[in-house]
Each structure stands twice: as structure tokens, then as C-alpha cells.
Image (cartoon, rainbow, N blue to C red; front, side, top):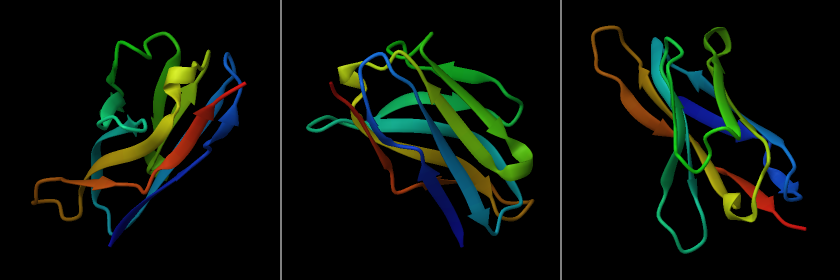
Length: 121
């Protein structure tokens, strides 16, 4: 089985910073794209940022210049450094990874259970 476990969420004041981590474990041959998504109360889940195995990144317009996604391929871990946080960044943040368990099979998307980020004064 494959597991994604997020950590690093919590309560932060507007303008503050947080760093999220997500570690993948289990039966993994390789990991393709990894990313972060978020879901605010009453809203649909949305893309925050993604990063390919080669390090190419993509960001939602709402977080460009404030959030930075990175990964450590040796540790099967993806990070999200969040700065200049705003009230509207409050959401449950989910980790996503496209993982190949066997070399000749296509990757499958896996999700973590989510970590809550609350931006409040």
C-alpha cells in the first residue's frame, strides 16, 4: 500500500508563514508529479501548486509569489512553503502524488488525508 502523510498545518496570523510537508511511503517504484491542493469551507478543492519529478513547478495565480513548492526525491517528500498568508488561504491542504508501484505500469493518483491551515488574527 501507498500512504501520503501531511504535516505542518496549524493556526497562523495574517502575514505569517507555515511550511507543509508530505511524505509518501509504501510500495513505490517512482513518483511523477506531486502537488498540493486545498479546500476551503463551502468551496471545491482547488490546485495550489504542483512539481514534476524534474522540478518544474506550476502555481495557482492566487499563491504566486507567496508560496513555494519543492521536493526531495530521495525522501519521497514534497514541501509547501507558505508566506504572506491571507485570511483566504484558510483551508484543508491535501497532498497529491502520481505514483508508479511497478515500472511498467502507469502512475496512479494518491491523496493524503489533509492538514488544516487556519489564518486568523
